[in-house]
Structures are given as C-alpha cells and as structure tokens.
Length: 141
Image (cartoon, rainbow, N blue to C red; front, side, top):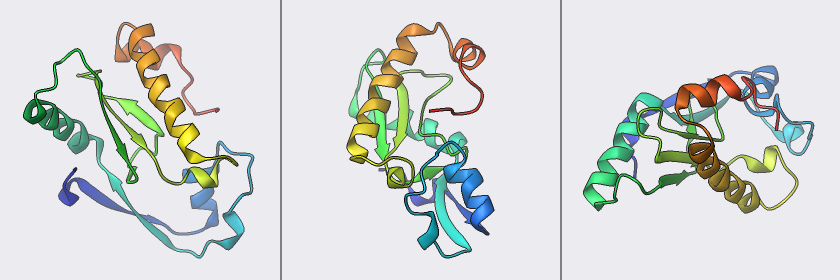
C-alpha cells in the first residue's frame, strides 16, 4: 500500500477545470451534471509513486523481469489512466476509479484493457523515450 504522505491534494475549482482534467477526452455526458464544485481529490506524485513501487518489488522479492502493476483508486498528478516507470519499465500503475465518468460499461473492462496495454507497451517499444515519441501526446481513446 502506498503511504498517504506520497499523495498531494488537488483542487478542481469548477466544471471547466473538471472537464479539462477528467472529461477532455470523453464524448460522454455520464455524470457531469450532478457534480458540485469546487471538488478536491487526492493524487499521487509520480516522483514518489515509482520509487515506492520499486521498494515493494524489493520487499516482495519480485524478479526484475516480471511486471509489478499497482491497481489504485487514487488519481495521479498527471491524470494518466496508466503508466510504466520510465526507469524501471516493469513497474507501473493503473488508476482504477473515475471510469464511470468516461465510459458506459463495467470499469473492470477498462482496467483489464490497461493491464494488457502496459504489457504491450513494454514489449513493443525499446524505451520510454521511444514510447513517448511514437505515441499520441494527448489521450485520444
């Protein structure tokens, strides 16, 4: 479990800010109208999350060539659905909550998709830099 001191509080002041953070890739209007602002959410800082994952790998004695993917309901500062560690690409996370704001199906399907996507990303691209260079800059999915 990732300690709370690795998290940061994020304020979402109004609907427009919320749409930039949460909905700007969604054509869905699933739950926007019922929200009250300002909203606050806890979000992981990447600089803290990935070293913590490496510590977990070490403490659990997970070999370096095997995946360690944290499934967490906590958001992250960059608001990514999922990511692998740039320096240790077998470590990663998937944000498991808020999917109901983006898709109209069981969120477990989206999380399962992200697990597969991270494994494919690691095996298709030679490095994190290549991944960034050859994939879209803004989420389109």
